[in-house]
Image 1 (spheres, rainbow, N blue to C red):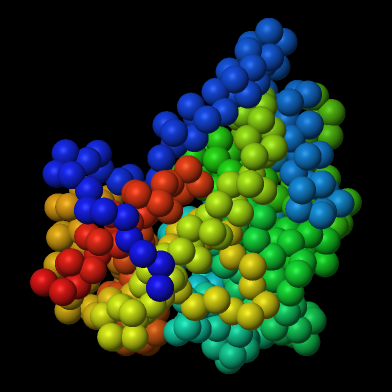
Image 2: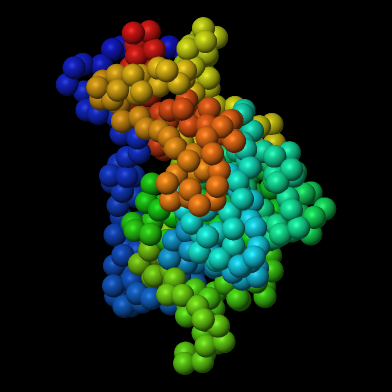
Length: 387
C-alpha cells in the first residue's frame, strides 16, 4: 500500500485534469525556438517543418510512411477514402468513443456499424465485431480507448478472414503498443490515425493529425487528398481537401516529440501509483481500477475508474468541490447520440457500452503531476466514495 502525503491545506490550488501550462513552462526554450524558426523561414503551410515531422513520426512509430494532416478526424477520413471506402460500404467500430470516429465514417458516405465493447477494457470487442460483419462490410476500425490499444491481433485475423481493411483510430495512443508492436508500426493495420489535439500525450498548440502506413501508394494517395488532390501545383487528379498539416504545428510537435517517451513513462508510473493507492477501495467494492490487457502497453492518456452508476454523479460533484478537475469520457454512447439516431439503434442494444458510460470517471493524470497532487486526488475520491 502506497502512503498518502499529509492532508493539503484548504488553500491548495486545484488539481487540473491535464496541465498544459506546466508542460509549456518545462520545455519553454524548445517551443519558443521552434516557433521562432518557423517565423524566420515563413514556412507556414506544409513545407520543411511538416516534412521533417512526418519523417520523425514515422520513425517513432516504426512505420514506413507518415502523412501529416489538419486534425485527427480528417486523418480517419483520408485513410478511409484512400482505401476506397465509400457509399454502400459499412465500417464497424465502437459506440464508446468520441463522435469524431463515426463522423469520419459518415463523411465518406459509408455506413457506421457499431458493435459492443469488452467490459473489462472498454475497447471494441472482437467477438462482437465478428458477429456484425456482413457482405457490405468494407473495413474495421478499433479505437485505442484511453491510451490502451484494442486487441489488434484479433482484429487483424478478422480482417484477413473476411478480406477487410483495418484502420486503427489511435487518437489517444501515441507511443502505446500491442504485443510489443508500437501503435502505428508497419503491419499493425492498413492505416493508423492519430490526433495531436492539445490535450493528447503528444499535443500541438492547435489542431493537427497524422496517418501512418506501410503502403507507399496509400501514403501518396492520402497526402494528395490532404492537399486538394494535387499531382502538381495546378494539376489535380482527385477532388481532395484543404487538410494539410501547417508548419507551425509541425515544428511544435517535433520539439515536443523529443520528450514523449519520458512523458509516457511518467504517465505509466502515475497510473501504477494510482493502482496501488486505490487497491483497498477496489477490494472494498467502491470502485474498479482500469483493466490492463496482458498484450497491451497503455500510455494512459486517461486514467479511468468505474464507480456504481447510481453514485457516479455524486462522487464527481464531491471530487470537483474538493478542487479536483475529474471528468467523464464518455457519458453518452454513440448509438444514443441524437445526431446518430438515423442509424436505428435503441437503448439496450449495446449493454456493455451503456454500463461503462454510466460508470466511468476520469481522474487527473499528466506527466508533470506531483505525488502531492495525486495524493490529493485520491484523498478527495476516497472521501467522496465514503460519504
